Image (cartoon, rainbow over all chains, first blue to last red):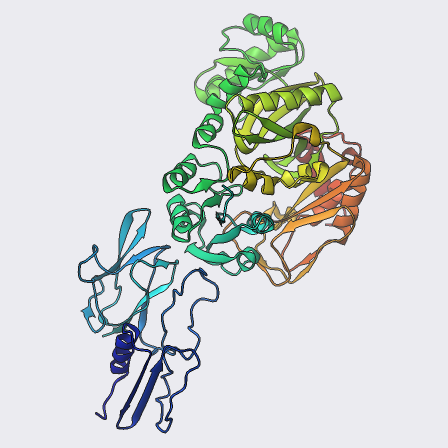
Amino acid sequence: MTDIKTQDIEALIEIFDNSHWREMSLKVEGLELFLSKTPGAIAHSSTGHHPADLAPAHATAPSAPARTISDGAKTKSTLAPVPDHWVAVRAPNLGTFYRSPKPGVAPYVTVGQTVAADTEVCLIEVMKLFTSVLAGVEGTVRKVLVEDSELVEYDQPLFLIEPV
Amino acid sequence: MALRRILVANRGEIALRIVRAARSLGIETVLAASAADRDSMAAREADSVVVIGPSAARDSYLNPRLIVHAATATGCDGLHPGYGFLSERQSLAAMCDEAGVVFVGPTRDSIEAVGDKLSARRLARAAGIAMTPGSEKLGTAAEAVAFAERIGFPVVTKASAGGGGRGMVVARDPKALADGFQRASIEAKEAFGDGTLYIERYVQHARHVEVQLLGLGDGRVLHFGERDCSLQRRYQKMVEEAPAAALPETTRNRLHKAAVDLLAAIRYRNAGTVEFLYDVERDDFYFMEVNARIQVEHPVSEMITGVDLVRLQLKIAGGEPLRIQQHDIAPRGHAIEARIIAENPDRGFAPSPGRIRVWRPPHGEGMRLDTAMEEGADVPPFYDSMIAKLIVHAHDRSAAVERLRAALESFVVEGISTNIPFLRAIAAHPDFLDNRVDTRWLESVFLPQYGQRKDV
């Protein structure tokens, strides 16, 4: 397990985010990973060397836009910093974000999936008018940044894609 | 039921004004901002902000779907459109109705009834309000003279096929009209291929006067006195006053009654303004149009009546009973507003966006500044270039003019060009001091003098 890639850790974080777990710690050769949903939590044993680009998922303040809608915790954990070459798919305007064509149907894309520039990745709804958003770049979906049916603002990052 | 949370669908000083008025009533605010305004003063003071679209107004502030979606998705039960943008767009009011969001303004039917020019004229006529008297198409000079003698000289001929000054001859007596009629007809024929003319009463000295109203939606309409907005450049108001000091008291009372009658007839709800052309020589007024929104110049009416019109708008929209009655509204003193605009009067009034390096507004008794600007703020190039409204209030007009001069004198803005030097020159002009201006004065008398001043 010496060749853990950033995307592997990303995938772990996504699994953790979507789980009911409060904490997760993982020790493998050359890596110690501690994730917690309690702000300010610290790993009980901190002997490992954290990879420089990883921080506990919820231990740092999310780098959301400085002032957005106040109701509800709209920002999930954001991994900072993100590899420079990853590309964000952004909302073309304000609207409600939908990951699938209709309720109960599989999402357009999932993490790890490869997409072409013209692959539909989500819908943005404005007053019952649905607009599909394209990936805009060929690559692999690395992160979904918004919850289904959440209000998104103009230019808000929705997905991160690692280009080919 | 009182409003709980409103979406503010505007920007700049009026957005800030609405945010503060709402806060004073315990109403939460969500500001719908464009990307250019996400860090604006209104964005900082609102309880929350949603960025609805890019800087270009047509993809943000002018898109009613985005705005109503933002309102419902953030749990707003009301929406205040401010002025400009979509404030008088019937579709916005209709979408709000359908989404169950209270539109802080008139009903969609009222917006339509007063927004359409012909429909508004029908309403005015039904309320017994005069229009500028004019004829049907006239075939001969003799017909024109006969009509002019009925409505009174001076009259102006107008080409039925087009405008732009072609076919327009001002005539002060029957002989001038008979002579001018042929000339005007030939000119119209050459310009538009049709020499048909009609005539209208010519208003030599016109003032723009308007009445501020608030309808309660049940047929009761309150008025908050009138304003004089005669200082205009290209139909854009620059300086506004309340009251209209040139009006005789009986005319003033007739004006108020006409405006109230017009809006009461359609059970008008919320803020509105009826605009009139006042003919100084004949001491008579004619209906122009109705503005179904809060207006830029509403502060001068607030200063003389002591009410907060935006708060009252929010109360009416929330269905709260108003304790205020017409006899409680007693205008006091005189107020003047000068619009501070990021433009360069020495370069054809070219807009002057940019960063405000120095911002030192005047302070003092009887002074009010409505603005969302401050030192270091950006004037974006995408929108209207008005950056502040300087309002002064004093016991009478000459004291108010004095206060305006002092305020403009000490107002320092650096980093962008503004019309402040231009406003200073207006405030010091003898015609302005003596209130001898009309709607043509700024462009035909003042501007040529200003262009020739020594200190350019």
